[in-house]
Amino acid sequence: MSRQQTTGGPGYWLTVLIIAGMVIGALVGQFLLHNAEAPIGSDHWTKIAGDIVLIRPLKLLVIPLVLFSVVAGVSRIGDPGQLGRLGLATLGYYFGTMILAVLLGTALVSIVAPGSSLSPEAAAAMQATGEAAFAADSELSKKLTGQSMGGTWTKILYQLIPSNLFAEMANGRPLGIIIFALGLGVALAVGRERTRVAREFFDAGFEALMVLVSWVIWLTPIGVFFLVAWTVGKIGLGELVAPIGGYMTVVIVGLLLHGAIVLPIILKLLGGNVHPFRFMGQMKPALLTAFGTDSSSATLPVTIETAESAGGCSKKATNFVLPLGSTINMDGTALYEAVAVVFLFQLFGIDLSAVQLFIVVITATLAAVGAAGIPSAGLVTMVIVIAAVNASLPGEETNLPIWSVGVILGVDRILDMCRTTVNVWGDAVGAKIMTRLAPD
Ligand code: ASP
Image 1 (spheres, rainbow, N blue to C red):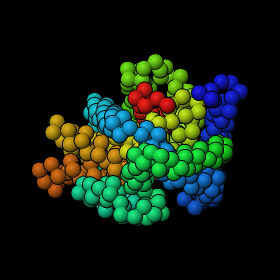
Image 2: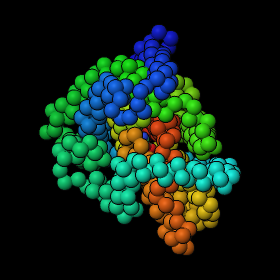
Image 3: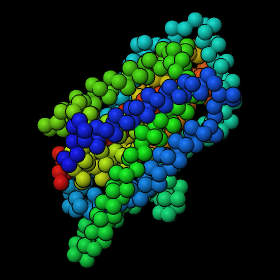
Image 4: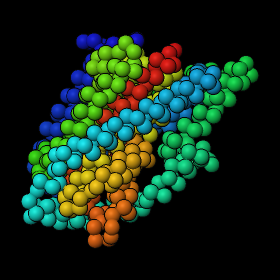
């Protein structure tokens, strides 16, 4: 542990600055909301500045980092037996925690029933607003209509078995790169003396990239300032108490329970001698970056840096668990998808049976795996869950229309910030637990 989060340490100051950036950003956003001449869109200067200062530099690092991190990590593990155990344990952890998150979300939304407790007029008004919001967002409607269960499987399989590494890199698809890197890492380990130089190259390359990350990290407070100002300027803090408040409360309470109780218990049980909340404190720069950027993928460089330096995770575990986790392991998204879908069915007066809730649990987990670590990805893959439940309902007239997603569109950005934070926290907990299996 070279860098503790003590008062005065770099991690401490980074956290303070990011929080300051968020608070000032929220104030500026609120000012923009009331004073901007036209409604704030994606071409607003705050969004452009946030992209230039933070999102683009982070994204620039992600693809090389995924390649170097996984190759260096896997070739360092060396022994295929240990790699197999670590791989299985990691996948078991990802799916186990995602299913727990979905179960928690489904139980909460079924008990609280935020969509059923509205008057028929209020429900009808929300439906009408949703239809209009959906119709106004042509890009989203196009994306949503293109989603299907079969299509998702094919997409995941195509990404798992890529045919051109450079095409995957150019299109920013990490899954295929991870697969290639796994193979190359094992080959470098098996090659022993003949491949020693290449192993050293990837090791040193990884170290150099981490130095770059440690510089870029200092842009986080400024980038988060712009992005939060944009979000608040677009939506406004007042939206938090809008009629959709019940749904938002269930998602946020579910995320809090999962992040602050379920995952810490798992870490305590499986992580050995770890203090879960101390570890959460150590991971603060990564969690705040996830909150500010809405993207697990863009946060990955910060997550790796923080987990290794402040969080005391081993390189072997971090290099392997975090890149894979940032695209596959999404506890927050899984929970959110389940809550959102059940809420929409409630709002449209369609009762779901136990079998249909089971379908929600399974497909919400898969939809979260299929979601990329980018803003709003969960909103798009949610259609898979809706389609699967629709298919199990008796007829067209009882189906939930795809445009119903419009109902929750307006508040999605805020929920995305919260679920992305839980996604990254879940990855970090995984890296800490796997550190036990693969210490440096
Ligand atoms: N924004 C989330 C992430 O990057 C994915 C989602 O939309 O749920 O982790």
